[in-house]
Image (cartoon, rainbow, N blue to C red):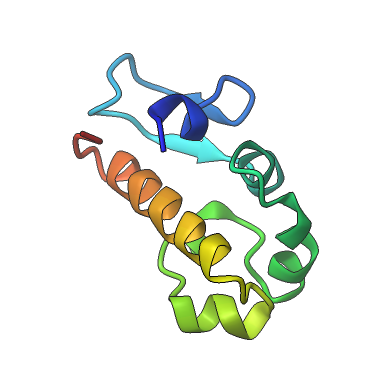
Length: 94
């Protein structure tokens, strides 16, 4: 997954100039659209995952419990969230 797929001008507002030192504000619906998994917005919001900060610690088991059961979709969630977690902590994404 490329950085452009995760960080898009419509999805992420950066409050610093450097990607390695930034604070991110991501909208769940826009982020899900960017990674092609917008069909899960309703079940995630219903389960209380309405802000990206809540999603960064979600486990594969929890994804399955809310209805994300396709293995490819689970892996896409996990990879994308790992990158967002690193960026929000100010780590290098590479």
